[in-house]
Length: 288
Picture (cartoon, rainbow, N blue to C red):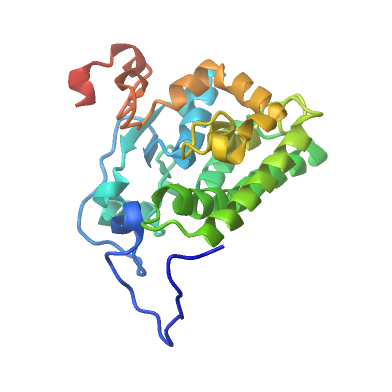
């Protein structure tokens, strides 16, 4: 094993703003807004500010699934937050999420607006608000929340760890890639063993645990994340692939993954969503 260069940490770390690879411009060592700009507010009580990254897809899938169940109160406006342009550092966004990460939700259905940030928290909030996709029996509820928190704790090793060093870092560091590839494969084995005996993460019931895990690990199992399918031999995780394929066929999932998407096939994009009809009336002019 060899690294591009030896590195000895200095006594005091200082920020080099040009470092960090592809996403260097969205990372900084301080919090707070960089500019004043209010967030738009649409006609529905639920206002989502997001982007169709795996974390963003979790929430739009949840909202579309709630609507498919007939929960009209789950109608929402989804506003795109282009993180590469620093939109997450606006004063308005920081008011909704002081951590400046997508997704962020404002619920204006009550007398006082309620902000919810962190994708797992949003999924739990919506599940409890509408009484759906979160089991009520104690054992099943605990199982669901355990897998939800598993995803929240595990995905940073996949995204900020493996994904960054494998796909985006300005130099390829063998030790970093090996370390995170090992952990990601361990995580995939955890899922594969679990799903060998279950249809979904919590038995026969489709829950917020599936919605949280699928955009990350389902995409990885299908070779759609970081172009790393061959490198990680994802074809070996047959039970994860079976589960990922079943979820991908759900109409609400197909709608949800399009919302706030600004890349790929234009037919897969819906930059903003303000009404169910947007999925049918989308045009190139509207996308632009």
